[in-house]
Image (cartoon, rainbow, N blue to C red; front, side, top):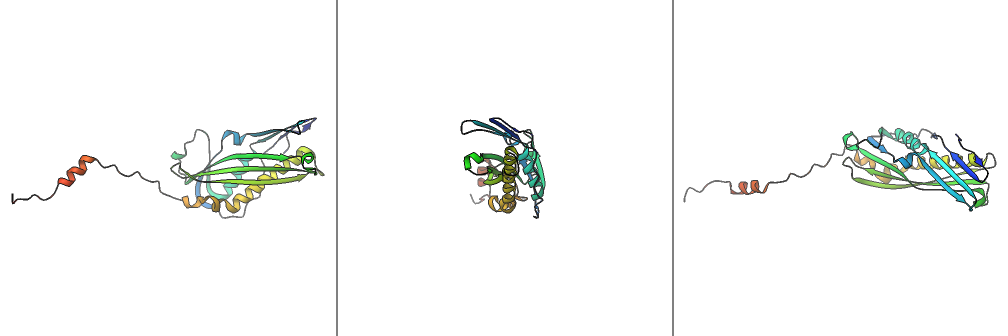
Length: 214
Protein backbone atom coordinates (compact mmCIF):
# COMPACT_ATOMS: atom_id res chain seq x y z
CA UNK A 1 0.00 0.00 0.00
CA UNK A 2 2.87 2.38 0.69
CA UNK A 3 3.88 4.57 -2.23
CA UNK A 4 6.05 7.16 -0.48
CA UNK A 5 8.87 6.85 2.04
CA UNK A 6 10.33 9.25 4.56
CA UNK A 7 13.45 11.05 3.35
CA UNK A 8 15.49 13.21 5.74
CA UNK A 9 13.40 15.97 7.28
CA UNK A 10 10.69 15.59 4.68
CA UNK A 11 8.27 12.67 4.87
CA UNK A 12 5.79 11.84 2.14
CA UNK A 13 3.14 9.14 2.44
CA UNK A 14 0.70 8.15 -0.30
CA UNK A 15 -2.17 5.71 0.05
CA UNK A 16 -3.88 3.15 -2.10
CA UNK A 17 -7.49 2.15 -1.56
CA UNK A 18 -8.04 0.41 1.78
CA UNK A 19 -10.30 -2.57 2.19
CA UNK A 20 -12.93 -3.00 4.88
CA UNK A 21 -14.52 -6.20 6.16
CA UNK A 22 -17.97 -6.84 4.74
CA UNK A 23 -20.42 -5.66 7.40
CA UNK A 24 -23.03 -8.20 8.47
CA UNK A 25 -26.01 -5.89 8.06
CA UNK A 26 -29.22 -5.97 6.08
CA UNK A 27 -29.13 -3.50 3.22
CA UNK A 28 -31.45 -0.52 3.45
CA UNK A 29 -33.85 -1.00 0.50
CA UNK A 30 -33.29 2.33 -1.17
CA UNK A 31 -31.40 3.87 -4.06
CA UNK A 32 -28.89 6.55 -3.06
CA UNK A 33 -26.56 8.82 -4.94
CA UNK A 34 -23.04 9.42 -3.62
CA UNK A 35 -21.44 12.76 -4.42
CA UNK A 36 -17.82 13.41 -3.44
CA UNK A 37 -16.12 16.75 -4.19
CA UNK A 38 -12.72 16.79 -5.88
CA UNK A 39 -10.80 17.68 -2.71
CA UNK A 40 -12.37 14.65 -1.01
CA UNK A 41 -11.31 12.23 -3.74
CA UNK A 42 -7.79 13.66 -3.82
CA UNK A 43 -7.19 14.81 -0.25
CA UNK A 44 -3.65 15.92 0.70
CA UNK A 45 -2.68 17.00 4.21
CA UNK A 46 0.59 18.90 4.70
CA UNK A 47 2.01 19.82 8.09
CA UNK A 48 5.28 21.04 9.55
CA UNK A 49 5.99 19.21 12.83
CA UNK A 50 8.03 21.04 15.43
CA UNK A 51 9.04 23.51 12.74
CA UNK A 52 11.55 21.11 11.20
CA UNK A 53 9.96 17.94 9.80
CA UNK A 54 7.54 18.43 6.94
CA UNK A 55 4.91 15.77 6.32
CA UNK A 56 2.86 15.38 3.16
CA UNK A 57 0.08 12.81 3.44
CA UNK A 58 -1.68 12.02 0.18
CA UNK A 59 -4.83 10.02 0.84
CA UNK A 60 -5.54 9.83 -2.90
CA UNK A 61 -8.77 7.95 -3.60
CA UNK A 62 -8.67 6.08 -0.30
CA UNK A 63 -11.57 8.10 1.13
CA UNK A 64 -13.66 7.70 -2.01
CA UNK A 65 -12.94 3.96 -2.16
CA UNK A 66 -13.89 3.59 1.50
CA UNK A 67 -17.33 5.18 1.03
CA UNK A 68 -17.98 3.38 -2.26
CA UNK A 69 -17.26 0.02 -0.62
CA UNK A 70 -19.15 0.82 2.56
CA UNK A 71 -22.33 2.15 0.97
CA UNK A 72 -22.45 -0.71 -1.53
CA UNK A 73 -22.80 -2.99 1.51
CA UNK A 74 -25.36 -0.76 3.24
CA UNK A 75 -27.80 0.22 0.47
CA UNK A 76 -29.65 -1.74 -2.19
CA UNK A 77 -28.36 0.55 -4.92
CA UNK A 78 -25.59 3.18 -4.99
CA UNK A 79 -24.86 5.55 -7.86
CA UNK A 80 -21.57 7.45 -7.68
CA UNK A 81 -22.19 10.85 -9.23
CA UNK A 82 -19.73 12.82 -11.30
CA UNK A 83 -19.68 16.60 -11.22
CA UNK A 84 -21.75 16.61 -14.43
CA UNK A 85 -24.52 14.34 -13.12
CA UNK A 86 -27.80 15.96 -12.13
CA UNK A 87 -29.29 13.94 -9.23
CA UNK A 88 -32.74 15.36 -10.01
CA UNK A 89 -32.72 13.40 -13.27
CA UNK A 90 -31.92 10.08 -11.59
CA UNK A 91 -34.29 7.66 -9.80
CA UNK A 92 -32.81 8.25 -6.34
CA UNK A 93 -34.43 8.16 -2.92
CA UNK A 94 -31.66 10.29 -1.39
CA UNK A 95 -28.31 11.90 -2.10
CA UNK A 96 -25.35 11.66 0.28
CA UNK A 97 -22.56 14.23 0.00
CA UNK A 98 -19.29 13.57 1.81
CA UNK A 99 -16.53 15.92 2.99
CA UNK A 100 -13.63 16.04 5.43
CA UNK A 101 -13.89 18.60 8.22
CA UNK A 102 -10.50 17.81 9.74
CA UNK A 103 -7.49 15.53 9.45
CA UNK A 104 -4.98 15.49 12.31
CA UNK A 105 -2.08 13.26 13.28
CA UNK A 106 0.56 13.01 15.97
CA UNK A 107 4.08 11.61 15.73
CA UNK A 108 5.95 9.64 18.41
CA UNK A 109 8.04 12.75 19.14
CA UNK A 110 4.90 14.78 19.82
CA UNK A 111 3.19 12.20 22.04
CA UNK A 112 6.36 10.84 23.71
CA UNK A 113 5.26 7.34 22.74
CA UNK A 114 6.20 4.84 20.06
CA UNK A 115 2.95 5.33 18.17
CA UNK A 116 1.42 7.41 15.42
CA UNK A 117 -2.18 8.49 15.89
CA UNK A 118 -4.64 9.81 13.31
CA UNK A 119 -7.95 11.62 13.79
CA UNK A 120 -10.37 12.14 10.89
CA UNK A 121 -13.68 13.96 11.04
CA UNK A 122 -15.95 13.29 8.08
CA UNK A 123 -19.22 15.09 7.42
CA UNK A 124 -22.22 13.50 5.73
CA UNK A 125 -25.02 15.61 4.27
CA UNK A 126 -28.20 13.85 3.24
CA UNK A 127 -30.50 15.45 0.67
CA UNK A 128 -34.01 14.36 -0.23
CA UNK A 129 -35.34 13.78 -3.76
CA UNK A 130 -36.11 17.48 -4.14
CA UNK A 131 -32.53 18.44 -3.37
CA UNK A 132 -33.32 19.83 0.08
CA UNK A 133 -30.88 19.24 2.94
CA UNK A 134 -32.56 16.61 5.10
CA UNK A 135 -29.93 15.83 7.75
CA UNK A 136 -26.26 16.28 8.54
CA UNK A 137 -23.88 14.14 10.60
CA UNK A 138 -20.23 14.68 11.61
CA UNK A 139 -18.39 11.36 11.97
CA UNK A 140 -15.24 11.38 14.11
CA UNK A 141 -12.77 8.50 13.89
CA UNK A 142 -9.44 7.53 15.45
CA UNK A 143 -6.61 5.15 14.64
CA UNK A 144 -3.29 4.36 16.34
CA UNK A 145 -0.31 2.27 15.24
CA UNK A 146 2.99 1.41 16.89
CA UNK A 147 6.36 2.02 15.22
CA UNK A 148 8.03 -0.90 16.99
CA UNK A 149 7.22 -3.36 14.22
CA UNK A 150 7.25 -1.04 11.18
CA UNK A 151 8.78 2.17 9.85
CA UNK A 152 7.43 5.66 10.41
CA UNK A 153 5.59 5.96 7.13
CA UNK A 154 4.08 2.48 7.40
CA UNK A 155 2.94 3.17 10.97
CA UNK A 156 1.30 6.46 9.96
CA UNK A 157 -0.45 4.82 7.08
CA UNK A 158 -1.66 1.98 9.29
CA UNK A 159 -3.04 4.49 11.81
CA UNK A 160 -4.94 6.31 9.05
CA UNK A 161 -6.42 3.07 7.71
CA UNK A 162 -7.54 2.11 11.22
CA UNK A 163 -9.21 5.54 11.56
CA UNK A 164 -11.06 4.96 8.28
CA UNK A 165 -12.22 1.55 9.46
CA UNK A 166 -13.31 3.11 12.74
CA UNK A 167 -15.43 5.59 10.78
CA UNK A 168 -16.87 2.76 8.68
CA UNK A 169 -17.86 0.77 11.78
CA UNK A 170 -19.55 3.82 13.27
CA UNK A 171 -21.53 4.47 10.10
CA UNK A 172 -22.64 0.84 9.89
CA UNK A 173 -24.00 1.05 13.44
CA UNK A 174 -25.45 4.57 13.52
CA UNK A 175 -25.92 6.04 10.04
CA UNK A 176 -29.67 5.49 9.87
CA UNK A 177 -30.19 6.40 13.52
CA UNK A 178 -28.28 9.68 13.15
CA UNK A 179 -29.54 10.75 9.71
CA UNK A 180 -32.96 9.04 9.48
CA UNK A 181 -32.16 8.39 5.83
CA UNK A 182 -34.44 5.35 5.62
CA UNK A 183 -37.48 7.58 6.11
CA UNK A 184 -36.83 8.92 2.60
CA UNK A 185 -37.60 5.57 0.96
CA UNK A 186 -40.11 6.18 -1.85
CA UNK A 187 -40.97 9.54 -0.36
CA UNK A 188 -43.13 11.31 -2.95
CA UNK A 189 -41.95 14.58 -4.42
CA UNK A 190 -43.95 17.48 -3.10
CA UNK A 191 -46.16 18.84 -5.82
CA UNK A 192 -46.55 22.62 -5.96
CA UNK A 193 -49.95 23.90 -4.91
CA UNK A 194 -52.10 24.93 -7.87
CA UNK A 195 -52.24 28.65 -8.43
CA UNK A 196 -55.80 29.92 -8.74
CA UNK A 197 -56.60 32.53 -11.31
CA UNK A 198 -58.31 35.46 -9.64
CA UNK A 199 -60.75 35.91 -12.54
CA UNK A 200 -61.78 32.26 -12.38
CA UNK A 201 -62.50 32.60 -8.66
CA UNK A 202 -64.69 35.64 -9.23
CA UNK A 203 -66.59 34.01 -12.09
CA UNK A 204 -67.28 30.91 -10.03
CA UNK A 205 -68.55 33.02 -7.16
CA UNK A 206 -71.04 34.76 -9.43
CA UNK A 207 -72.37 31.56 -10.93
CA UNK A 208 -75.55 30.09 -9.43
CA UNK A 209 -79.28 29.84 -9.86
CA UNK A 210 -80.91 32.97 -11.23
CA UNK A 211 -83.79 34.66 -9.42
CA UNK A 212 -86.78 34.69 -11.85
CA UNK A 213 -88.96 36.62 -9.41
CA UNK A 214 -87.41 39.92 -10.42
